[in-house]
Length: 170
Image (cartoon, rainbow, N blue to C red; front, top):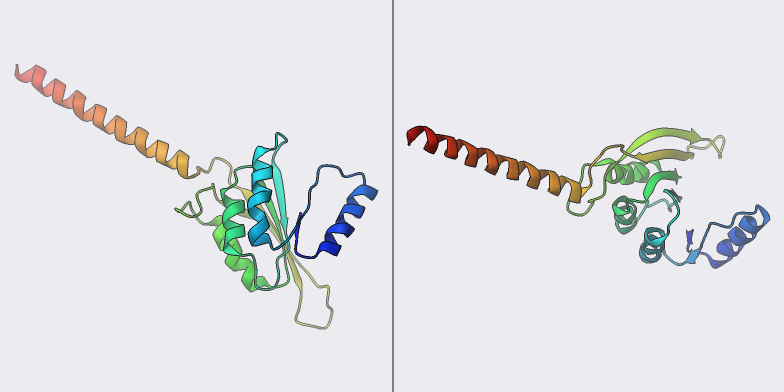
């Protein structure tokens, strides 16, 4: 877990211990800084797929956090908790958009969302959304390989046509 408040990390550690959860690590600091170390740890881990749970401030996730999660192939699901539907939708757009130079991991898709009215008689609500990595979607490297394969096939086809033309004229 990445958390700005050290006391919250201590609470999370106690909670994990009380519930017998051992496969969790915590980093104290701003997520836009600590995300690099977290992704490095996740990428070198030998365990299975990763589910990221994010609960950003009202302004939403920093672009570097979205980029890091999107570009880490081990992250298969993102559970997004938000108190600001507008900033959440801006972030979700980056998770689901097609591959770009910056977002070169396979895109996610929005699977489910649900509002929670935790503040009755006010205009405020919490929003929960599940994003899952698109099955069969290609990341930037796979798209590049496919383009190179297609180009190679095109060149071989041209060479075959040229060889056939020489054979028939000779």
